[in-house]
Image 1 (cartoon, rainbow, N blue to C red):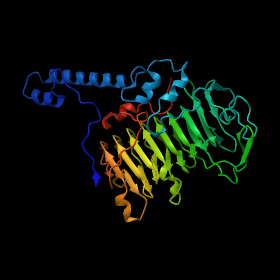
Image 2 (image 1 turned 90 degrees about the vertical axis):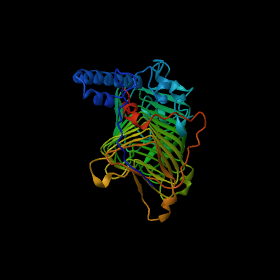
Image 3 (image 1 turned 45 degrees about the vertical axis):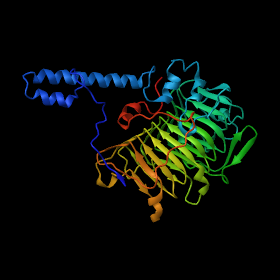
Amino acid sequence: MNSKSKNVDHLPKCYSIFPFIPIYQIFSMAQSSHFLVLSRMLAIICCFSTFQALQIKSTSNQDIGFNAIDTCWRKHGDWATNRQALADCAKGYGAGAQGGKNGATYVVTDPSDDPINPKKGTLRYGAIQREPLWIVFQGDMNLKLKDVEIFVNSYKTIDGRGARVEIGNGPCLRINDVEHVIVHGINFRKCLRGIPGLVRIDPDHLLNTSSNGVPDGDGIRILSSSHVWIDHCHFSNCADGLLDISHKSTAVTVSNNYFTQHDKAMLLGHSDKSPQDNKMYVTLVLNHFASGLTQRIPRVRYGYVHVANNKYDEWGMYAIGGSSCPTILSEANYYRAKNDSDAKQVTRRISNDPGWKNWSWNSKDDVFLNGAYFVSSGNVWTPNYAASQAFELAPGGSVPILTLHAGPLQL
């Protein structure tokens, strides 16, 4: 069953000065009136004012509209002195990720890197400590990591708010066999493959990546981990994936991020021979998947994925793909296809198994533009959110406004 493209206006319905009469009716009425020009001018002014008011309501610090995540920590305007309030704001399956809540604040003052003996003041030193830490940055910083990814330990928040922080031109982050990690407000650009060798993963232990996974060039790689929240980051131009989640990882939310300029953007589930990923639960919400992405937005194996209120612009091949019977609900997203007849379908089953018709892949309240369409199959799955994880969805037509500030914020 296909969810076909329909003629959808993504702007709010605007009403004229004539109560409860839509603009298009005023235009029609005005055709026979000598007030034609005046009526049209007044209607357009009213429409612009209505749209402007909605846009302000949706993006101001005081009221982020439907974006409950940002409203949670920005509404009081004291985020800089109350940073740890962020830990209570995730929604979806990653809600409850504590990060470094109730831990000390660790300030990154040194952009240098040493994978074996990291110096105090560097990001790597803070990230590998055992105790909960809320990691912030002294100022704008470009970090080029040496040889091996940073292994982020449990109960850490890497918080880039208030600075422009970029990690790139080398290996980037690995969240491996840990829990309760938050990464917020970081730019990941040109993450590269690393060199096999030793890396410190906590103050007392070194790991030889030659036998435990050579850095493959992902922006963030999440393996065997739970309660992870990735929020307001930028991902582009990495050597492998932008963001991969695999090896029994679960309870993950990816929200408010900006993805662009990459081929295979996001992998959820390691391989078709890794059924342990059948307990993976991931929420993708309020992200902007911009033009310049080709495929895997995401590509899913085995797990359960709720794709909600995301903006998709002109993917190169397909947007959402998968194999090995994953369960996917696409809800109230905004899909705009490119001007290519071969790239209109949102979905792609990467399988020769005719059983794909029974996989639960469904579209609900999505907006489709420029011929985009979603091929549904199977029964509709409803995410089993607990009360603390649940969130109110905005209409799909509101998504372009709600994702205007995807990526690191200028605060």
